[in-house]
Image (cartoon, rainbow, N blue to C red; front, side):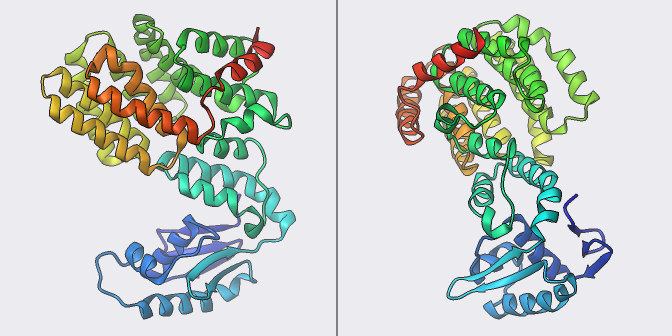
Length: 377
């Protein structure tokens, strides 16, 4: 367990047996810093984040930093807020490396889950780029998580030091997104599961979500829809709360592909209600895409186009290449089947080509298939 913990109920910071009590704005400021360890923020940025509804001045930040510094002196120097000359402040953590390495693993995973769930790709990048400053070294599977989210599929293709199971998982996923050959991707995933090559961490996700998405693309719509009763039970049984909305969105897409538009509309209403409580960016962007498709089906073409554009804008806010590429994949794959508007396809195909070049994915499909064939045939 990570030794430093923020307790919002008591407005305090806990370190081993010590508790440091903070004033509300002190706690909010420190909580914000904890979300981005090692990252420098200007006074104006901190004012915008912590004092949104107030009218403070730059000195407000300085005063709160001063008071926090006095209080955290009790923590034996494991935590400090540094002044970065001419730029602002940053939070630094200085745990003993041996202790940090052993305790940080679980915390890194928790951070990854939070950043991934909330759609904060920039935070993941900060985590990856500041390992030395934060006193830890990212290992697998956490390094793989971040590389995958940021779209560095070439890294998985060319780096022999990566565990084989992780290379297979991410390259299968990359193949699905970029190659538009769902039958072949499905073959790869099924073989990987049958040979038990996928890391345990991904096995359940592949079964309840990834494979279902690919089945829908492959036209196995009835079979995919028939599995959702069991999937919903699995999500509930294992407490997979992060998958509730994602699974519902996939089911909604399946209903649309099956022509069950009334059921899809009902599903969209339920998803919208869930998103008011947990507005994760990835799910919110995907919802706008499906809502846009439904509007186009209902004859509200301009509204549908606007909703799809809104979905794309939201997905870009995640700064996660995997999310953006999958969003575009769904637009292009569904274009002829559900949207059928040349303007939309042309616009997003251009963006798609730009991202493939940016992430060095264009023309890499054959290399990926050769690697997967070698290990999965």
